[in-house]
Amino acid sequence: MNIKDFKAGVFRRGYEYEFFLPERINRRWIVSDDSSGCTR
Image (cartoon, rainbow, N blue to C red; front, side, top):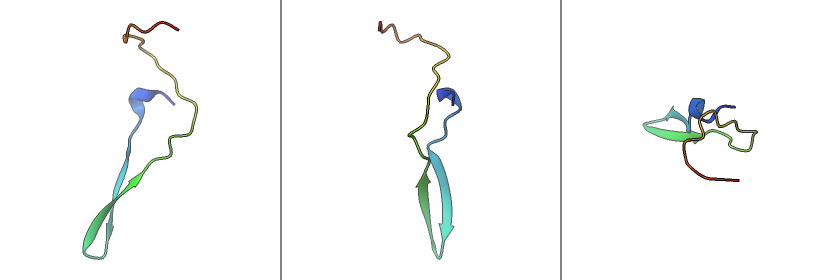
C-alpha cells in the first residue's frame, strides 16, 4: 500500500453517537517520494 493513499479509518454511526473505527496498519508500505532526507 502506498502511504499517500492511506486513510486512518472511518467514522461509523451508533445509536445516538458516532465512533471512529481505525484501519489496520500492519501491512507492507511503499514510500513513493523519499523527500525526508534520511539515509538508510
